[in-house]
Length: 276
Image 1 (cartoon, rainbow, N blue to C red):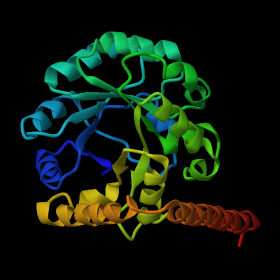
Image 2 (image 1 turned 60 degrees about the horizontal axis):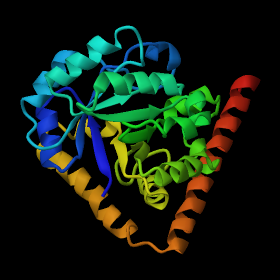
Image 3 (image 1 turned 90 degrees about the vertical axis):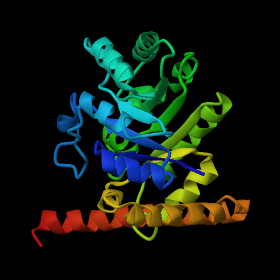
Image 4 (image 1 turned 30 degrees about the horizontal axis):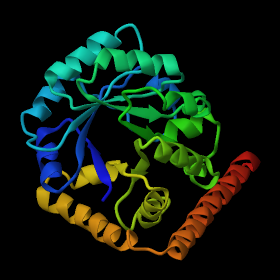
């Protein structure tokens, strides 16, 4: 089953998430350059802090706490040391662009936590063959949002029908590095239906994904959240037994939804530009 990641700094939500079978709690410390990159975008800007690691660590019993730190900078040593002392199990490095940045982070961590790279820059994509050779990388998550912004695409899911994620999946499978990409909405919801995205995760051999903000509305109570997670698990139990033809059919629908969305956006832009 997919390792589901739930972003929260609220202890009660974290407890409910663990009970519901979510794979890890995700605390987000990244702030450096994020508002500028995602200006005018409907994206989540975190207000999490180092002390939230302590709060979550106090209530979580079994699942790991993953902390997204800031991109490599002069304060990285301090930030990483604080995360480790406070109880982080996995550190996620965002916005890296070259081998040197990753190597420096690996040396700071020194194997005390797992390292998950968040691949979300065109530079990292181009240099991925060299980056994956660095010892000390445990996981790579492909960040569709910032990667599509960096590549000046119109829709983050374009990356799924352009062959780029297939290319990365092949490289990561060869290196035996656990990987995932993007996030999923609730079953029955999403610009691209969650069911179609889950099918693509299984086709590519992805092992993890982030739960969208929509799940936060249910996370205040265990019963509501558990119901939504059970829907995902039930659908996964079907998808994992699909034939190759069924995966190809799902990919066809994925490409159709992406092209349809882009066509609608194009028409909307034409109306806006013409003043209609």
